[in-house]
Amino acid sequence: MSLFTLTRRTLMAAATSMLALGAVSAPLLAQTPPGVLIVGQIAEPKALDPAAVTAVNDFRILVNLYEGLVRYKPGTLEVEPQLATSWEISEDGTEYTFTLREGVTFHDGTPFDAAAVKFNFDRMLDESHPFHDTGPFPLAFFFSSVESTEVVDDLTVKFTLNAPYAPFLSNLAYPTGLLVSPAAVEANGADFGRSPVGTGPFKFAEWRSNEAVVIEKNADYWGDPAGTDAVVFRPITDANTRVAEMLAGGIDMMVEVPPTALSQFQGDDFTVVEQAGPHVWFLILNAKEGPFADKKVRQAANYAINKEAIVNDVLEGTADVAAGPTPPAFAWAYNEALDPYPYDPEKAKALLAEAGAEGADLTFFVTEGGSGMLDPISMGTAIQADLAAVGLDVKIETYEWNTFLGEVNPGLEGKADMAEMAWMTNDPDTLPYLALRTDAWPDKGGFNSGYYSNPEVDALLEEARTATDQTKRAELYQKMQEIVQEDAPWVFVANWKQNAVTSDRVENFELEPSFLLQLSSVVKN
Image (cartoon, rainbow, N blue to C red; front, side, top):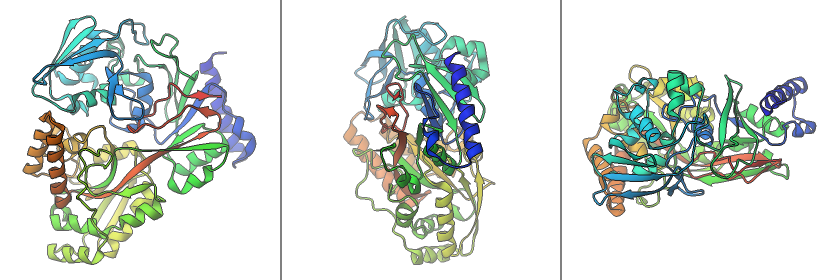
């Protein structure tokens, strides 16, 4: 019997047992097989093509199947070699030449070489590329500075940028920079995202929609072999169900544990892991139409919402109140002089009166759960109550995560006044550049779903990403934060500490500041 068959039968048996018992019981704690790690995910992945997805939920699977030229050094957001062994940067900062690792093959047996690297970036960036239609590639923005990708020889590839671009190496380490097999893309076309092929320590085995994604140890991996025979990612969208499955032994690991459930995992049977990282949870406000087109109303929303109560009561102290668009995890770029908007409902009422927006009706998009969204329904309900207390009538519409993204990412115009959102980012450039610039409006290919626009912010962001001196970059980002906080295109809610829980049969697991789920060294007994 193959491991693949064993994994599927074990999962089905465990699920049947749980349904029959209808309750958590100790005998189920040994249900999962040794050598097979079962992870409770927050949602079904959208696709398994790293260039085509945006959610950390998907990236947590992909970083175990694929690799990039560089990666984040464990425990940090610093960049270190992966499929490249070294690189050189030209004096003017516009040419990056990478020496590639020798003897690496994709899971389909085809060689990893400079031509494969060129294929990946041309597929994303060149509209005339024969496989550009396997997109769309929503985060191709990360590499918009790339003018050309050149094969120097089989193991040398050179990127030429149109200007110095400070976040380039960091963006290469982000999952959008993970490298796929050109042969697999050519064979599967637009369906590649259902049949992924990379170079990583695990290779794809099966995707059963709304049930499981199964990956298995890559026996031909160039590096240290994976510590488990297989990993099964199960989408369990309801947080309470994930908790129940974890307590019952139906899964070995779950991420994004609801704060109210953390106390249930105190004891020898479980390990709770926490890790701070660059996270910001916010409300997108529709600055193009409706009440939030007026800055005073946007500021009123920031004053009206009791973020301290949300952090302490809903999130059980697992987060800090956010002061602006940049997470404090980016210490070198964070503006420590900014204080969060205080809770001041009377100030909110006064601003609403000045704007003539008392009693305004608002539509609020909330998700059932998704990447970094904390406890979104409880938070959404608390926010609705706070806004009602200052006279705003808020109607909540709730969506499953991928449906929610399909509603929000194309823009709120004509649909909603506000929406929950969370980002985990790799560089202080990423979130504001993709979600606050005028040129990042949805109809221009970005994620500025609220249509915020400020030419001074645009100029600061453009200058910061080409500045090669980090001190200068920091000054530019700190000025941007001041302006954005004043303009209030979002309600700045919280910066979260990510968490996960594992069973006592799981060893060597650590969370990463990148919010990615690196599982190659994990051992499941």
